[in-house]
Image 1 (cartoon, one colour):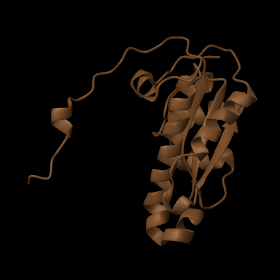
Image 2: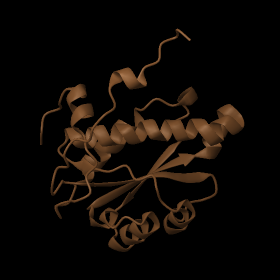
Image 3: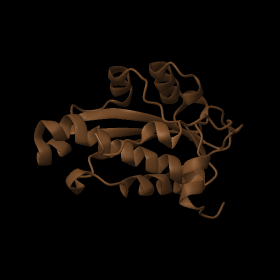
Image 4: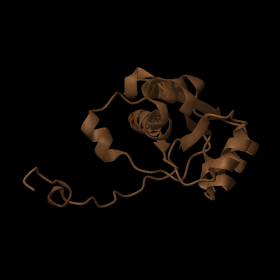
Length: 176
């Protein structure tokens, strides 16, 4: 297993991986990913997330169909990050339910991606999927919303870096 790397190296080096080796990802490593996720910031420290670990081929296949992305099925493990809307609403009402729980689960998702990369794993943040279908596949109760599907595995190939907009195009200073 690789040593922990510098944070900036992980941020700059992480790529969306869509091809995986058939090698299994041990339960202990998956738990490390979830441990990293649960340390993400959350509004009011409500931690409105649940993580569903999927290893069953049929369930992975159905999630891949819901996302219209076949590579999801090829990963040894798929983590579905879910937002507990009711938990978020306890502290913040409708804004918690509609916004904060999404922001919180996004932060948790990023932690998973970075931790996975630091451990030599590949991931891809899949946000484009039929949410109602994913909810049915996973038998989620009302108030638990699937937000991200993350296939996890050892990369079969490493994608090349994509371009990034220069800082000069994305920074605005308060000199309106």
